[in-house]
Image 1: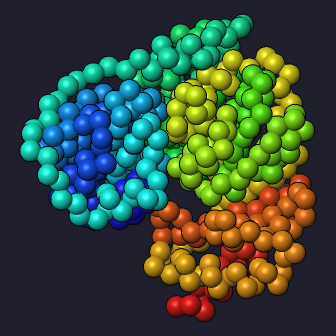
Image 2 (image 1 turned 45 degrees about the vertical axis):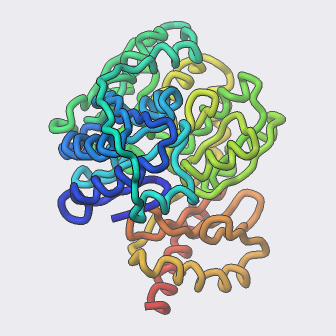
Length: 432
């Protein structure tokens, strides 16, 4: 089981059991000042069972629960702004046998200071019993006010991936004027995995050859991958397109995660904007956004664009509309050409999570000798030159260490990542 600011995640029935759900939901109730919590789940088979258990724990502690049903994560985040807190039953892009819980306070994910209150036992003195309500969301109406109407009725194909985006994404894109076709609507018949950033998206690539754009979502609808002219784009392109739209709207202050493509940062600076870098992770990006009053940003690795004025989370649904709205603008082609001039590779190698910190610590002295500039903001990052870098960091959700690299040359990028994985494996053997 993983317990991080990204939420609780585990294989349901093995290391995530209903008794754990009861404990974590009960602990979470001690953080809910409003005494109100919205809740929703994605399409995982265990979702309803976990949700009903969590609802019972919350109501036992005096929390009124507002059930949205099966909805994407961004919908729960949006509604949590009104009610004060939210709980999402999902493990995002993890394999289908996994499930988990994402916690929302004041419209944002929990931070490092709040995490211990959820994972460590808390005594709750509330004596009243909360009530349960079924509610609907104003998400589509709210998003339409941000997006307006698109021109030329672009033809869009959406790969639902069997996830919760099916309830919202097609309806929103149709509302703003797109012609929409959907594939892989149902989980049991989906031809692809839950994570569009790693799946080949073969069906979507084939279908999008006849359409202007293709969009692929993960199971809870916060990750978005773009397919253009039958070609899958790297997840950083999703963020790059969102950033280009933000610049078009006049926004200048951005936060990007440390593993986001240097191309996005350079594009922002060339357009007169400024960038600050955060640790990887949606909650870390948002935390820095709040501290710096940033207007937009996100993390490229998860295809996650964030627009704080609308939602404090990765916004796959809204971003699909933002991208559709700029399809015929010069900024759309400009950012694609700009990002195609860089090559980025993200890989991973298996490392027991109990040894993650020792492996990273062991690598630090090696990096300091090899690279003229290093950063320990998140893991260890070595700056090779103005256009090239390598980042080695532990995963918050799996027993792996992630190795990312970027360069203007694909061959150099491959070598950077290969060397990085070799260093991690050598370090792992040394500390075992």
